[in-house]
Image 1: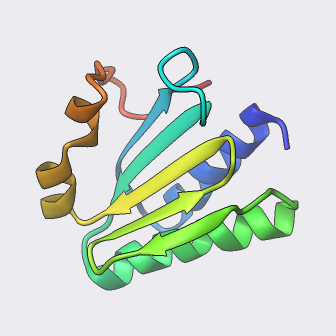
Image 2 (image 1 turned 180 degrees about the vertical axis):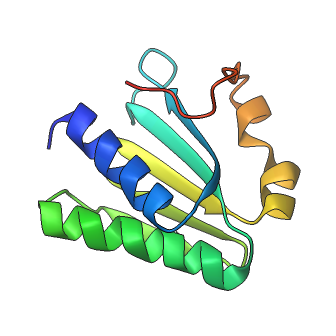
Length: 114
């Protein structure tokens, strides 16, 4: 699936279930294994799971490649081959601080187009 279409699918799926603080980061040139990383927060364990489930369901329906899904009580990682999606509780997101880990400059507009 084309990267732009997959990215839109992921963002739409997260927004459909009211994902919070969505950030999209173009990883091309930073790492070779993915092109894009999307990070979103949920308000509870149940909300995090619902967000992740919606992304997986929409990706399957669209015929996207789902490499794997890793679940923790406060974090779900979805590997869509070209895009990695992190759905986390705010505490886990703050603790792991992926934005800082990757030394990313987060744009003022939370969701950034490809």
